[in-house]
Length: 296
Image (spheres, helix red, strand yellow):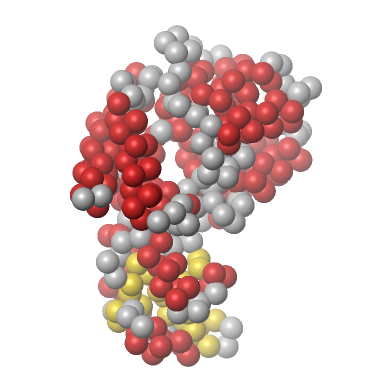
């Protein structure tokens, strides 16, 4: 594990800046920055921008010097790089467009939800995750999914982590209550949206519950991503629990991963199993092996 810095060559605000990145985890990067007295405002999605005047100090504190091209390659290989299309301004625009399609004319509700999804304490359960779930749903819907099902599931995706305080079960219940309250009078059967939200607490919809299966599979689609995507996901989850000591986090995360592996099947739709099943199995078992090794 290491933190890297490139030469201060990037002009802005009357000086030039370096980039500070980690080859392993954002948690490590944030710890280094905090110990060095770097403001959290200097963090830009996957790196810190630091002015030239801090360069020598950061090198003395342990940042490894590399050229700009090498730093980009290190960030890409770390799996932590956030693609341009996943940066906040583009994600916000995409989501607000999707909200208008899901519930036309109710912009105020969508904007309130966006505020929740962009709360500063979130690291994985962010607007990016919401967009990923909605895009996953696009790949799962088929001809037999009628307009009402699609609307209920899409709205449930918007609300499923609208309340997020890191309290499993309680967060889903409060998110479901929020959905029921906000959507009453705006859609038919808001109770269905709330029911779907509650299912994301355990991701175990019953056989024949097509709407529940769609939402749960989309929420778990991240598990079946590329190794780089999965590494970025796992790092963000660790960062959300940065206040938890390593040993306690390892025990808790091990239980979560073992629960996911035990779900049989993990993905309840045929489409989900085909798209993400094998990759998810590989990713989860690799993480479990790393967690068990760390816990020894």
